[in-house]
Length: 265
Image (cartoon, rainbow, N blue to C red; front, side, top):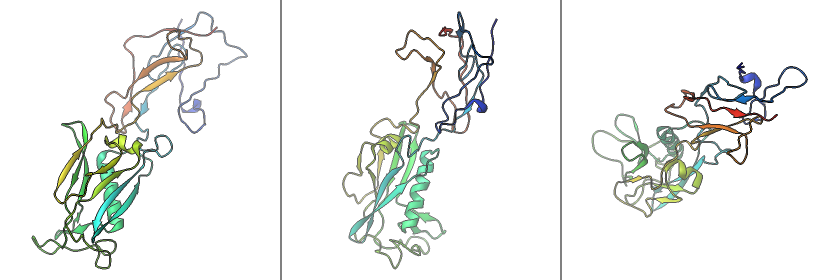
């Protein structure tokens, strides 16, 4: 006769990792002789368990992945200024990271305002689905306010403001500095500066390694009751990936067949 055990938030071990659930069997002792276990749907328990979770795990995390920091080099006057970007722990797409870059540039005053009142930036990050890559687009910052259309304006404060160090004396593009290899994995770029040398014309840069916008590629389910003779640790019940779950959607795992495993006596 099969028995079902359900684990939910009340079984979560409060150790700060949100990854361990504990079930206490009623009575003074539990006998697991000749008992086998299997997963019905995601998570784990004796015999089976029903559990689903939302894809809410941070992909940018200062403690777990150490992938929150990088730098932007912007041209100003006859030199450059380096802007440090630190992303708060959260779930990010490339568009989200691009917005964080723009926020850092606004705070530094490294942008201009077009006749429509829109901020103009000279570096952009986006996803390139054709090449399965992160794409960076670099445009040259002008030496004077553009004269096309109506009046362009400077920011009220910061580098490109009238009281700042000013626009570059020669047209140059901003550059992305990857000085954190873990962030480099997110955008698919090895440590370095992009473009590698100071450039005066527009260019684009694609990932030069496979990007890992989400560092977690799979989840391993363990249970200390399991006696799995086919793995060294002996406690692995199953492994599953994210499937087609998008950020904020439900990750659901339901094996097509039960994989029964013996329990420790």
